[in-house]
Length: 452
Image 1 (cartoon, rainbow, N blue to C red):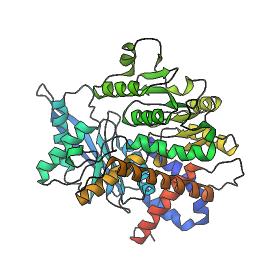
Image 2 (image 1 turned 90 degrees about the vertical axis):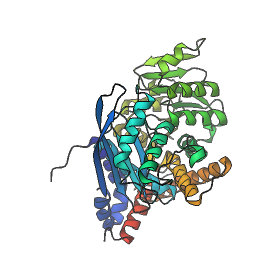
Image 3 (image 1 turned 90 degrees about the horizontal axis):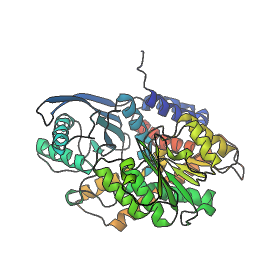
Image 4 (image 1 turned 60 degrees about the vertical axis):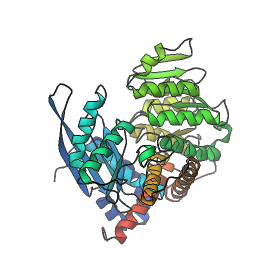
């Protein structure tokens, strides 16, 4: 059979396959599990027809990839962005399987969305789109079947519209979406979870590899890309701890703060982003010369010194050349807040530097950014019990989940990287995350009769 060209998915599959080679060499029977897990259990594609404010019908493509349910109901976000296609959603759903496995919660992997662009649309247009989208999707999801969540383009507003449409269509109030409002089934810490969880994971990496660049020190320089939900809360947690955040970015360019961003800066940018504004417009409203805007550039080559780099925008946002620039700037930790934020070339640069004992440590998104889906899982648990946990309770559980995810990656990376580790060479968290997640899913699949 001639398979379609799906570059994003093929990249994700290749990364996993390469990482698994030492494990598969020792356990060749698991090759069959790899052959089977890469094929989604179900792929849904449907037409979404909605009415714009002029009364004209518009059409978009809707998708849901229900990838793997070995560990629990399908779980993964709904992305609304013009770039959405089946390759992107298969890559995201495939990554989600192993990310969810690392949380230790009962969640399978899935992803969905549409090539609809919320930017420039009125609230009424977005509501009509969400209602049309859910009129098909509602047949295929449910609290014990498939629990979608937010993603790029799908924030609190869209989740509200989607939930309301589902409630009317199904005549029931259940936790079949996460990221809900606090007054109707949402969880404390959910908006912050991916960014906060990323920092909790990074703190463990720093403690082992470079405590001299602790996030408690103002002299520690952190570069962050993106300026959406993940990047905002990543930056706020870094600033709260005491380190210095010097960069943010969006699709139009990068913003550099020579002396660092303040909490007030991040909150102001957050308000602007809710209205669809850009960093370019935000910087024109600021007095003084604290900021420099670089149109059409990502932040990785714009700072002379970077101790920790945290990509938080989208896939493939760190190239091989930018990875080399980061190493030249003295980077010690690279951890993805975005999914597959680094290209294959960039990952090779970071991993080669790690193997050479240069102290550079890379953590893939499936491990470092699993805090978001972890708190989604905690939201599901609260909904099932009809309870609401406090902010402190949820934050404590998130810290424990990220500590356990780090521990799993460290142990599996030490055992299954295929490398002879010396005192100055750190274990591969890339291999660790892939192997640890894969083993858990593959064993569950075998016990359920999906391979033998």
